[in-house]
Length: 557
Ligand SMILES: [Zn+2]
Image 1 (cartoon, rainbow, N blue to C red):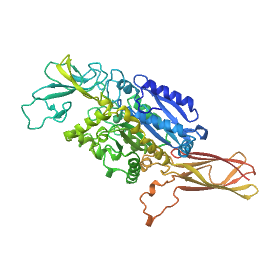
Image 2: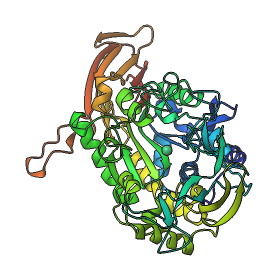
Image 3: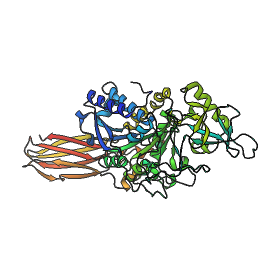
Image 4: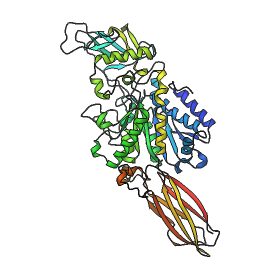
């Protein structure tokens, strides 16, 4: 399969049908809802159904493309699904994982936004295509493809008060006019587009008509439009967001989640809204350790959104998926921002958000040079005169942002997404897993039996996933149910026993070798005495939403 590719909705839907037909035992697809324009939001369940249903197994969640133009995420999610399907039966790790756990994958949360972004005459929206907050266009510039070349580039026109000039390094580029510079040829730069209600004098930038941001519409600290733009009229008001939230609420087996976005080459972790100091410390350590592994595998740094990825130093974003997943559900959730053009062009350790505000102009030149050598010829378009219906003589040109900045040039898609597949497999290895350590039956007398059961969690994460999930009571303790047929009787022990929670290895991260203490807090033990005739069958169920379920039958003899 070629993963140097961006999948249209038609291609995506067809591919998923093919996979379901080819691997019916390993993959199921279900539509978890319809988009605003009525497209299916497909969710893939990857697990070996012969070893149990998905809800009986712990799960990793992967989604992508909640933001309309961030279509690299879809390719990344499909890359992962494809390699899981093909690895089953050939690769020990994948086979074991699909036998005993589940990957839920939503390759495209926002099919409408992707449809618009990939259309022959594209339209770029942040998320949803529904007008919001108002039905009418605001006065000012609305970006769109005005010359029908399938690209939304930039417009420039001369103005003595412009803040740009032609670059001294490369005449195709624009360079910022310095603070004390006068008497040169200066330009204004605008996005390619048309002006709503233009009076012939004042150029305003309109708020986009489709102003929703699905990643502000989740129920965590949701705020109104006045405080958080794009958040929608109420939490989960948007059908795409509601589809995710409903599914996740109904699938308490999810422990770890990844949401793919573009761009910056960074792994973001909660919170967006508060400092690490205000988080649960044990969870923070686990978040950081998993993040370190992610950095080792992918080369992407892992940082807190609040500390290192705020759009404005004094403002936070609310209603994000990762914060909701962790804060309400206690699920370890990361936002992976795929691809970064400046980094690819050799600019080291750039400060993601600050860089936009201020960076040396030779870095712009370095990036353009990289694009000349590596990207498609239309990555950067030379300025060409255009007779704008409202502004008159302008020039169109500049970056084709969609396939340079927002998403990698085609030849670089696969190399970017493939880094994340081994990280996903590592996450799959961390899930909690119930197992029976010991199950003994001892005959006390001819119709009296002693049952000794030791249950363990063989995973890295505990049966409650995170401390936050305990705080929120988002995960139930492990229970054991004994199914004793009529005629048999429990003389000691109960039919339903609560085992409590089982630790994994994540609570032992801070233990040094010289003071090492590794108690068996991942185990719990129960005993029963049963009066029954020999040969009686007893059913044993061990239940945990997060760590899976076990069904066993024993014969008393
Ligand atoms: Zn995004």
